[in-house]
Length: 303
Image (cartoon, rainbow, N blue to C red; front, side, top):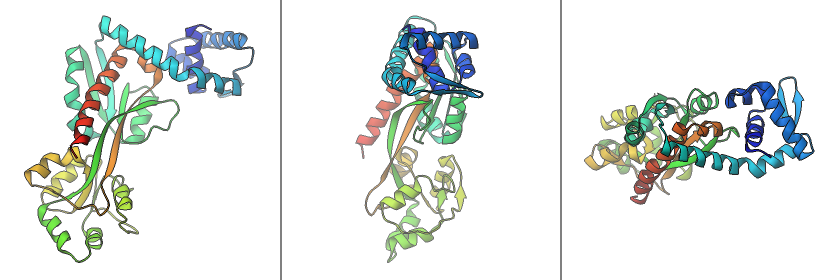
């Protein structure tokens, strides 16, 4: 079995489409069909059921994908990284992620890429948009705090941090002086990432804070906006420690006591396996894994 045929098989398997695989691999549809037919001859069994709209893998294809998928991705990534070290990797890298993380954590890790000649276009969006933009090929890499569930994507946790509840000193003092801290907390104006109370719901649940329905006073997907309002003495919120560490150290914000403990957030770097065949993307992925992985470890061990 040739590496080219196996690569084609994995792309068809992930895309569930001959035409989709052809676009991803920059091949013609007849060439992709020929690769699959040749592999089916070598295996001795059909790998896909051809349908009007796409293909469905057989049990044989499921077994083959499980056996070779990760190994093939690892091998191709290694080859691309090796090529990147020996050739020009200049070009434009399209990367998308949460606005506050991109500004306060990612930007500082881009310098080695910029110095190697890579141009970077940064885009912002929430978790579903990040995954969609990467799957559709509009962005090479994505950074999301949402778990990676789409089988077409690969992901790796590159940064972990505590999620802490914070408020201005005056608000925190008022809450701590109340007879029922958790009841008073629920009555205080809440600043949230979205109406689903992302981050907040996990913190409340872990600390067994009872609530039925919380309607945030402010909703916004860049937590730096909430941070600004908090520092001005309005309401409370929870956020990753890296976003409020400086304000905590300067006394602009105070960490609210967690009855049981703080929660954790994990940021994932995500990509399409086929994207790592481009030396520029493979090089950027490895650089960000190393860079952000090191900063995340330092921050977590300080808590």
